[in-house]
Image (tube, rainbow, N blue to C red; front, top):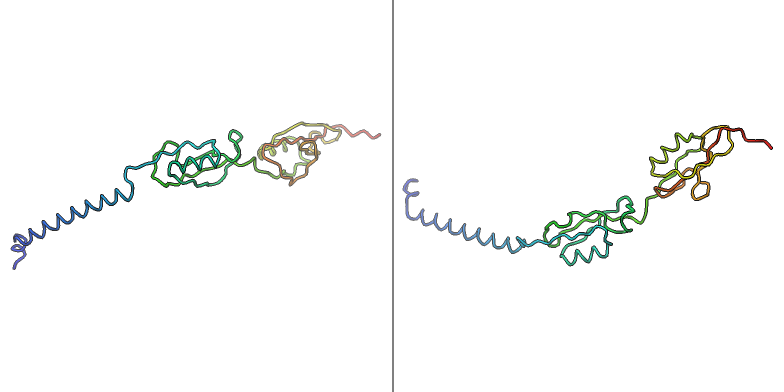
Length: 187
């Protein structure tokens, strides 16, 4: 039998029709199964979690069939309570599938601690930007008799003298004792 006769025979058309019908039925059932197994069209709305504690966030996510995943804590933000959510991904109001992980960034309990640099015997002009760049604040400035004008003679935190390497929370106020350019009087 030649190829042209076979392609125009009733047997070929019957088999072709059966193959098309079988493919349509198979695709129909595959799509129905996918719609059922993936919950197609069923979404959960991500709640607003910023500013809420971890416990409250967990309850709200469970109520919405979502899963909490704590990423990490960020830099301390004094505008939010300790251990509260300061960022979330995906954002609130977005539609997501059930059991989707919602990534949370928490506010730590306070500013991280930073090492105090070696500033003794440096000028105030050098010490001020160094402290500010590290996140410290300049507190009270006291002048004492010393021939080196504006030279840092001592660093103090809450009235106590501190040395280089001391760890203090970021944004701490450091008081400076500077020389006033006068010779110390010899009594």
